Image (tube, rainbow, N blue to C red; front, side, top):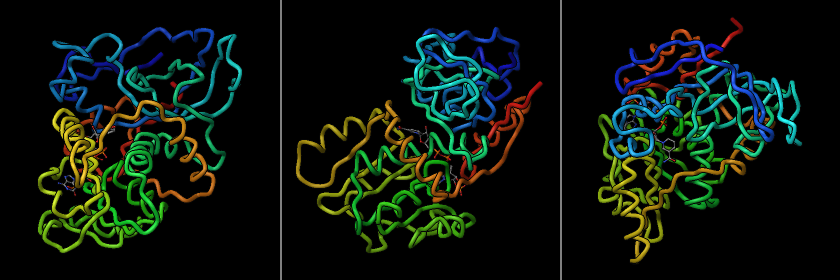
Amino acid sequence: MRAVKFDAYGTPDTLTQVDLPTPVPRADQVLIRVRATTVTSAECGMRQGKPDWGRVIIGLRRPRRGFRVLGLEFAGDIAAVGPAVRQLRVGERVFGFTGFGVGANAEYKCLSERASLTTMPGNVAYTDAAATVDGFTTAWHFLHDLANVQNGQKVLVIGASGSIGTYAIQLAKYLGAVVHGVCSGRNAKLVEELGADRVFDYTVEEFTTSGERYDAIFDVVGGSSFTRCRSVLTPRGCYLPTTNLAVNTLLAAATALIRGPRVRTRMSVDKHAALAALRELLIEDRLQIIIDRTYPLSKIAEAHRHVDSGHKVGNVVITIEDD
Ligand SMILES: NC(=O)c1ccc[n+]([C@@H]2O[C@H](COP(=O)([O-])OP(=O)(O)OC[C@H]3O[C@@H](n4cnc5c(N)ncnc54)[C@H](OP(=O)(O)O)[C@@H]3O)[C@@H](O)[C@H]2O)c1
């Protein structure tokens, strides 16, 4: 099968197209013919070996074998099933998250039927489905599971024009919150159209001096810090960072012990509940899926270059056509 892998940390030039053996599903696994995947900022970090502590998992000097094919989210169809598979059938369209095993930058990927995957609604294209998984389920995990955002609360999303951010604005609105977004001026209209009640242009405005106070501040891109946000959080408010996890995990432990605003952050591993919510919203056609650019697998290095710029809008999709 065609796949793209990287054997050393570095620039997008480290990505090479290779021919690998098609995997064979174990008893409880399904073999997925991947039709679409994406390039996320997290994977570009993995390709570069950043953050440094991530190398403890991925490989100190070079990526371990299990991490050399990237691709965290996918949409495709089931090509074969192991003998113990009960829920899924050959030919069904599925979408989901590969987890830390990554590997959807390839024509085929095996996953347990209990992994974070579900059947695709009939009204959704592979390219759209693949572009929802990581962004939406991460937004769900932070806003729904960790912050428990309620009707009438006020939420600020920093990095509102990225993958997680575009879903976070829509999800916070869906949960009944008043939603403000932080992005650059060129993306302000998009973020308003997604539902933001107020937008701060981070290149010219400072949200901490606006007089607004928030029940939750979701910083998706590391554009702030808890120290900076503390004064604009309500006494029981929470700061939700997806980046700088080493520092923010320590802050989460410390703020859990004292009165006042708290830091909440945790990796989401089990995405079943979030995927079920996502599937319902897709069936009801209630989500806008923002796709910045689409590339074929053979041009994935160009996709990485674009994501490396830090200025993608929404999602960057990779299609894997028949050879
Ligand atoms: N902890 C977890 O469970 C978890 C899960 C998934 C991802 N992550 C992490 O989350 C991070 C973000 O992911 P993502 O894919 O959503 O990001 P992304 O799509 O790459 O974000 C890019 C967007 O951020 C905007 N931006 C850049 N700097 C900004 C700033 N200072 N203020 C406001 N907006 C800014 C850019 O807009 P302009 O071009 O206009 O600047 C661009 O549209 C990644 O680092 C990833 O590793 C964590």
